[in-house]
Structures are given as structure tokens and as C-alpha cells.
Image 1 (cartoon, rainbow, N blue to C red):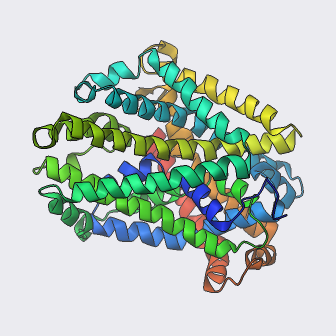
Image 2: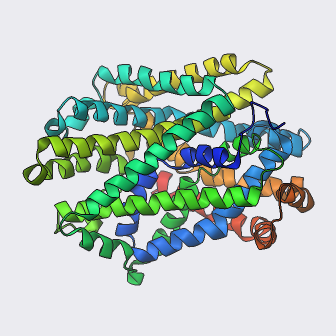
Image 3: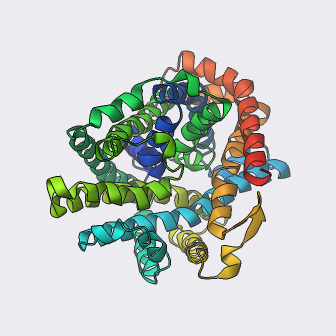
Length: 465
């Protein structure tokens, strides 16, 4: 079993691969700006609390379920429920969700690659103009970048678990950590960076509302890739001698650490370049911040550091964001690939071809939904406005379905798998302690109630506001 190519070769290999799925655009930009807009240090404390109190038990539940069954989410749901049709539907939903997320996330990854290449070609000043992004996302070049992104994903996934996913994670994740720390150190040397730090870490308890609490929980939940089926799939690649509790703790600490360091890069940079900034005026959209706001930050460095140095910092930032996005995309696409391979008894290459073809077609339609094709740009109407296909995918499968999938996993574990089976799996590979006992109580009682509430509130806000 130790030499099984369909298993991670070590605990650190799993942690890096799982962290690759978890660390994405939301960590680098969305998390620090959400903290700044919603109570600074108070938001950080809420976030860390939710990671420990809610997300860590769910990480353990997904990893345990995956390793015990050795199956993809669909196979795990079917096996534990003894082929119940209702639970098979729930398992299928946990496959459809990452597939649909992969469609729109491919488009985001393409934009990051394109901006990185544009900076390398010396066009940082053009990126900083207000109209550039709108023209860029409707450019025919988008499809060339899309082909490159899909090619990279295929190259990694063709290698399988150990020679593909793990090997790529061992190369790319240290690169991401080095670039992130390097940028954070540079930003902290800028004048007025201390103002950003103060705002970032000072608790503003008067700004804590239900929406802020919900935002901190959602950020923690999404950041750790819960409800996507990724951790069930990766759990099936874990060895029996691996300590699940230690692995879960390492994953949670790594992801949270990246988010906190990203805050040391993002907020001080904003305050250093724009001292009069009011974080409440910043965009809630990570996309808007990355592609419209940040190029202006880099251009503001030109008078002091010169155009070449500013371009170097910008290129490093967009490369950092691209690496974070591509590692997440690889993990997301692996979920339906693994399921198709197992359910249809196909080879990895055949399953990968089918899934990648579907993702590619979906990404093309999604990329065309920004004004090029009317019916794609006006794909749906809710909350008083037309929504593009891209918007619908984000609203439905990223913002809404993920907490619902997390709820289904809790119910499956409690109602079908039972506590003693999960306890035995968690204990395999090492002692568990208090976290094992807390996990069972949390998954049985308050976590399902919280996730159900988040799901209902999200549906109302997204589709009926």
C-alpha cells in the first residue's frame, strides 16, 4: 500500500495538495479586504473561531469518509447509505458542484494568466486604465489563454495522484509561499504601511453584525474547500497509517496562515499607496480588486521605484494569484475525474478527457457571457436584474450549494455512517483526543443547524432580495 501510486506518498504531500485546493483568490484578496470592511481584528477572531469550531470537524468528517470508503463523493455516499437513491442523489450533487465551479474558476484563472503575461510584455500602464478589463475579457486572446490553462491542468492530472497532483503541489505551493512572504515583506517597508496593519488587526466590535458573522463563517467554509468533494476524494488517497487529526490540523493552520499573511500584503499596500482610503469603500468583489484596483496600486509605485520595479512587483503578484488559482483548479477537476474513473471503470486518461471536454465547453460559454452572446449575458433573471451565465454559476454553485453540501455530509455521517465507524477511522493512524470527541458532538448537533441557516439566508439574499 505504501507504494500505491493512487495514494499520497506522505502526510506533507497530502497537506500541500489539499492546501493547493484551499488557497485561492479568496485567500489572497477576499479575506483581508473582508476583514478590513467588517471589523478588522474582530473579523479575524471570528474567522479563526469558525475554522476551529466548525470547519475542522467538517474537514475530519470528509477525510474520514473518503479514507474509510476509498471512494469519490458519489461512491462514498452510495456505499455508506447502502445504495439509497436519495443519498446517491446527494453524492451526485457533490460531483456536479465542483464541475460547475471548475467552469467559472477556469475563466478566473485565464484572466490571471493573461494579466501576468500582459505585465511581462510591459503593459502595466494599460492594465491600470478604467476600460482595459472590459476589453480584455472580451478579447479573442482569452481563448488562447484558456487553451494554455486547460493544457496545464491536463498535464498535472494525467500524472495521477502521486506523480501529478502531489508532485505539482510540492513544486508550486512552496513557490506560492515564498512569493507571498516576499511581497508581504516588501509591502511592510512602504511608508504608511503601519496604518494598514493597525486597521487590519484592531478589533472594531461595533461593526460586528449578523451579516459580518455570516461572512466570517462563509469565508472560512469556502476557503477550506468544504462541500466540494475535494477532501472526500483526497481522503480516499490517504494511507491508513496517516494520522487524520494531525493532517486536518495542518491543513487548517496552513490555509489560515496563508490568509493572514495575505492580509499583511494587501491592506498595508492599499493604505501605503492611498493613505486616505476608507476600506468600507473597497469593492466586495475579489475580481474587481485584483483586475481593476491592484494595477493602479502598482502604477502608483512608479514615481518612487520606477516602471520596471513596479512591473516586477505586479508580475510577482499576478503570478502568485495564478499559482493559487491553478492549484485550486487542479483539485476541483480531480473530483469528477476520480468519480467518473471509478463509476464507469474507465482509465484515468479517458475519464480526464470527458471531464476536461465538458469543463472546456462550459468555460467557453462562460467566457462569452460578458456581452458577446446576448442569451448567455442574460442567462437568468432574479433579484431584480439580469444575470450572466458566469454570475449564475457563482451564485448557485459557489455561494449557495456549498453549505448545503456540507449539511448533507453531516447528516450522512450521523444518520447513515454512525459515530463508532467514524471514531474507528479517525483513530486509525494515531490517537485523536479531545478533537475526536468534539467532532462527533458538533456534527450531530450545532453544525447542521448553522449550515442550514446559512443556506436559507443565502438563498433569500441571493435570489429573492
